[in-house]
Length: 210
Ligand code: T5A
Image (tube, rainbow, N blue to C red; front, side, top):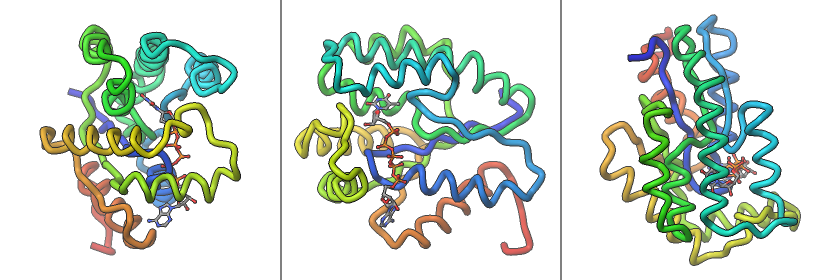
């Protein structure tokens, strides 16, 4: 049992998870509560270097290599950043964690679940996962609008792929009581309020605004 809570901001590309994690970061900043923000792929210098390789359009690695890269970075990120913070009582807010590999990589790589299971003893089960749910069409429209034509390797996989990603996320959510599905097509201010309320509840933070 960790002293801090692990909270995952999850969902498809451009679903709004980073915007909402940043908003929670801003709200928590003045509270004196100990917490850390991180992300995957990446989060540590080692895993950030892997991120560049994974997302680069320069390399066309086989799906199995891609999964192995994600988990290699994840195990290191968990060992050197996530676990130490949690053990010291800090909450960790991560932009993506292992559910992303199960949602994305399992589509092209049937070995994904076996690799996940092998690495699982080195990972931490999240206390709460916030799944920012949008239809694939909305995600693609936001990507095209905000990326100015510079989409990375995974973002280029198209509507059918992202529809499957969404379905995989929703299926996992329906089997996990710690995952909360947030309708991220709603106005951003509403999504931010809902998100902040869930985070406050998870970490047991009470304010006068309640
Ligand atoms: N990946 C990652 C895997 O395939 N497997 C894995 O195991 C992992 C960990 C990079 C890629 O890696 C893949 C998935 C990705 O393809 P990433 O860095 O998390 O992962 O990439 P993105 O998901 O693309 O992250 P972004 O930060 O770019 O997108 P977000 O966080 O989903 O969206 P955000 O917050 O940047 O918002 C996008 C736009 O939408 C607007 C925002 O203002 C912004 O312009 N927006 C809204 N607009 C209207 N209404 C709302 N409610 C809105 N919410 C946000």
